[in-house]
Image 1 (cartoon, rainbow over the protein chains, first blue to last red):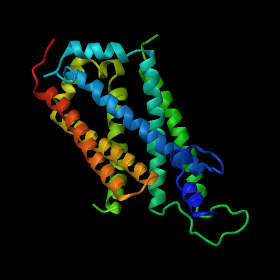
Image 2: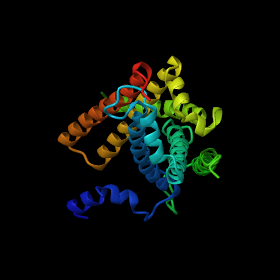
Image 3: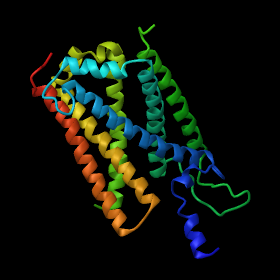
Length: 156
Length: 117
């Protein structure tokens, strides 16, 4: 392979994350960890903006009931609550999967590497990692259910 | 700062964020019903409780440092060159300082600002 081709192969950028060819569960979890992290950061920045309306918004000078009521009229509805449920889902996946990544980084759920043999599966990946990915998905689903029950309480 | 230390900060803020966000969500959806938790009077009493104000400030700093440092790590993975490194690192610091300042302003005004109708 020519040097240019090799460089291009190793520099696939975001397209490289999103191309599922030859992906295993850990690689999917890695990709989703990145995407969910960026999504959560965008939500947090939006949340900083909407909570600032508690004190009148960017030009406010103190707690303002009318300003808080105004921002509530925009976001406190079924659509806003569905967004919050989605945020809860990805937040809990990101948190639980992040704990898995820290445990892996510390070498606690990481098998010893050994010689490469057919069928060329990464031997360093332990079943513990796979279980924790499943745990992350289950925790995220339960948290979304909890958010649904909390947010839609009394709306009917 | 060394990259290994920045990764330790990333892991430290991750663990702290899991704990602080859990408490925040419990405050919003378990201790009070959601509609009560986001009512103006309840929010005012929470902001003006010194302990919870410090908690919110800690949550703000931890989440923003973790988030922007995470984006910095992603950007360094996508591309590597000395100017890129310098601009990404500088942009991360500016973004953290600006967003923490804006969030801190909300907390300070909620505590010390005059209440309007």
